[in-house]
Image 1 (tube, one colour):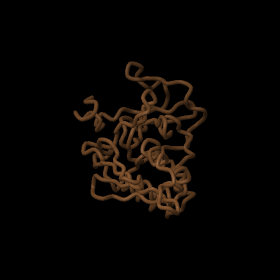
Image 2 (cartoon, rainbow, N blue to C red):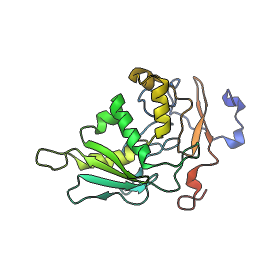
Image 3 (cartoon, rainbow, N blue to C red):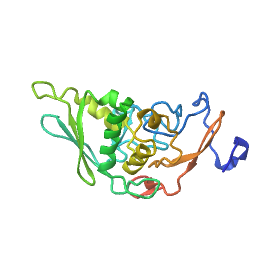
Image 4 (spheres, rainbow, N blue to C red):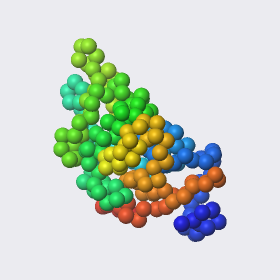
Length: 226
């Protein structure tokens, strides 16, 4: 692959300036310390989904959530203690395996084990995330003493503000690092599996380069078709 900006074909390269300040650490979506703003910046009001994807996308023009990995609208139960989300059948990882409800559960369980920013942000508001079947996720709200949800709006923020990671890759990075939290969070994850339209190409102290994933699942007719 390319090693410098000069090696990139200019007619096939889009340059985006002003985003990266210093060398990146890596591509690990479980870690808040990768200093890789284009690849890994998830917030409830505008996650960058170049490489990793959220369940929903937030549209700041109308304040609505639109399904990305999720299929259709999320559904609350009557007392807003459970939020049900379906996963798109077309959604797949860069290794061609399907995105499933178990990936969402594994992402949450990894956050708990690592006490990373996902868990510190949402742990007080989410009691558990469970897979009902291969394509159905139920997010259970943490409850007050009277049984009411602590803050269901935080659950909605989880839907658009957390990258879903592949369970198999999570299992592999935990095993590789002997379940050591510090080592996992520092792992640059150069072998990371992703679901987005671009993947890692190379990085140096001046730029971060992504390469288009020509097999991106978003080309499905149910999405953008290209």
